[in-house]
Amino acid sequence: MFKQLFKISLLIFLPTVIYAGAVRISPVQVDFIDHEKSSSIMLSNESTESNNLQIRVFKWLQDENGIDQYLPTDDIAISPSIVRLKPNGTNNIRFVRLNNDIAVQEQAYRIIIDELPKPVDTRKVSTGLEVLVRSSLPLFITNRNNITNIKAEIISVDHKTYVQVKNVGSRYILLQDMVVTDSLSNKTYRPQISTTNGYILAGKTRKYEITEGLESFQKPQQLHIKFKVNGKDYSF
Image (cartoon, rainbow, N blue to C red; front, side, top):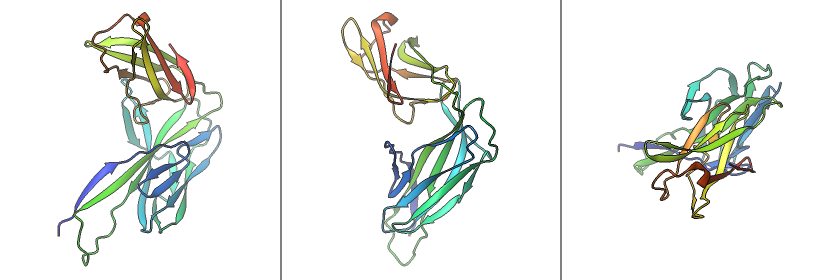
């Protein structure tokens, strides 16, 4: 019987753990600071079936609009890069920098963990659907002197209103809980921000559309912006 494969991406970000299907991943971020050369994550299979996983690392860039781009890289070695997790088993995945010079400018990468298809047992009746899970973790090479510095403003582009956030610091930022308040009407707007679009790499800019009933651009002084970055409140 023909077996069709569908592939979906699943990112469930928790404070210290993420789950890729039945596989528990910890920690949720890898950082190399100064001369640190190696780090690791732990994969734990919490199901009664084995899981085959492929682990890769991509260079993470953002264009002038803040759109993510992933490029192949040889900067980081992975061991092992393919793993078979036994039922209720664990495996430690090690990442090693091939150049451990201090990064003057922060470098960003993405760890991509893909579930591989299970072997097909032709003796069994096929369900006709297999869901393969992908998980993505950030990896940063940075130094202790990199700092956070943020600018935010309201802009209008093609009759649409946006919050534009510029990361003018030397460290990545992760936006959360953005609220825009109209000081005249006391009405609030919440641009949609998640761990998918909330990252802004060092020196990059991203804009977030205000779509909840703001029909026309208002004077910037009427709109006030608040959000969190790594748990710290910012107001503009």
